[in-house]
Image (cartoon, rainbow, N blue to C red; front, side):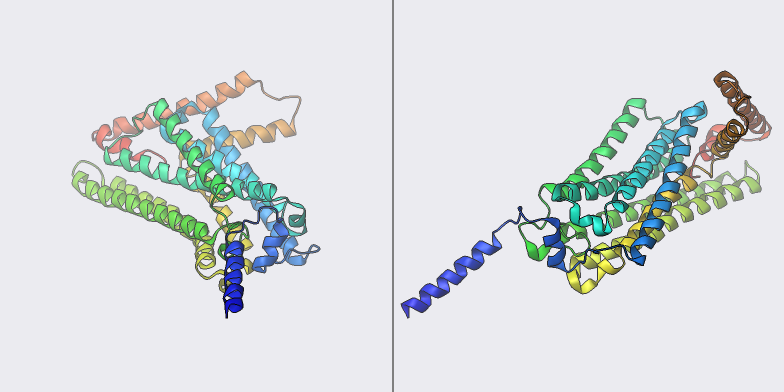
Length: 381
């Protein structure tokens, strides 16, 4: 009887020691085998499809967001808080393209060669870039919310506050990227390992998904309030402005809201649902069968953002056109390349002409520009 009791006690001690063991010395392949996620021994057609699609999206994301940053830098009319935030969002999306390209070039059979530190860095780059991108979306929504409700063209935020906000955005992104590698992983709890990211904790993935869904709900609430306010304001101001102006204002706002919310839902819902299912169900979710394609779709949000917030601005479109024409002219005729002074003067002349045209239209409009005209002349509205 005593021998059986001792044996039972020893088994319990072994189980306890196993449950408290941290597998810091094990490599990446150990955790992949643990959750049943296969690492290809060679490149399969599926791997080539994912790699080609991913790198193509990364290239487009890089070029599109680089164009936005150059346009905001070159045109002095964009040197305002809202455009600084848009430029930072473009920088975050550009970084997302670079981070995702790094993921593509370190996936498939190459995963076996990664150390745990390299694997964590690969995931951290994605977490930092996507967190910063989503945080920028939220910051732009907050700025537009405050500006529209106060009937202003540009925010009254000082440059110091804008810089502080940008620093906070990147600080949040860096923190979210470091959380899994520092303490919220499954190296000491193998039952909590994710099938999508085998070294990540399933509880962290649930937290990450819920956090993004809450951000989405906040954006919905903000833009809904903006729409309700604009509609009521348009009805009150209809006696002082033309019906066409108010109708166009409401239509443009509805288009912007639909594009912002629609792009976020389409690009992020598949990935968020994948993380939720993996966090809640584990292996039963079969999330690793389609998680790469969901990640590509989520990355497309970094491509859609410049289209929504920048290409709907007429001045931004003109700046894009000027940059593309200058590049084509430079490539087509190297000998007749215009000097930097001439280029800057041409852009200034076009910008001044646009400003004069806008001022003439304002002078012809029989209503108060501070209360009606200026407040609707901004990105995303």
